[in-house]
Image (cartoon, rainbow, N blue to C red; front, top):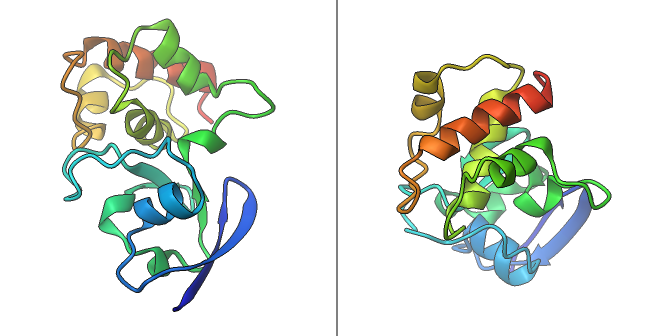
Length: 156
């Protein structure tokens, strides 16, 4: 069986995988990072969004072997030393979640979307989160949370 090596949440990892193993399954089943959710398995819902070399990608749409040598950040890797990332805090403080299933992917997409911007319009946020589906909130509080998160991140 082939092996794959990458950095996940700042730690070097190596594991054996079948050639057809999706990145989302490698993260969840081999590394036990279950914050990355499996929603649709067709890259439509965004529940599996992670950062690959700093860019938001849908991990159900990529083979683990394709991430060889990459740097991956999952929702578990955003918080530092027990302190939530500003975007995580903004989602909590602005009620940008209900059931929570889409939240990890939504937060990861939002962090990537902000990427140096502090004054995103509602329309820019909604467009930037296109492809991340929430079936509970109606998106109003998600947009509010992303705006607050962007301000708290200070353009970082």
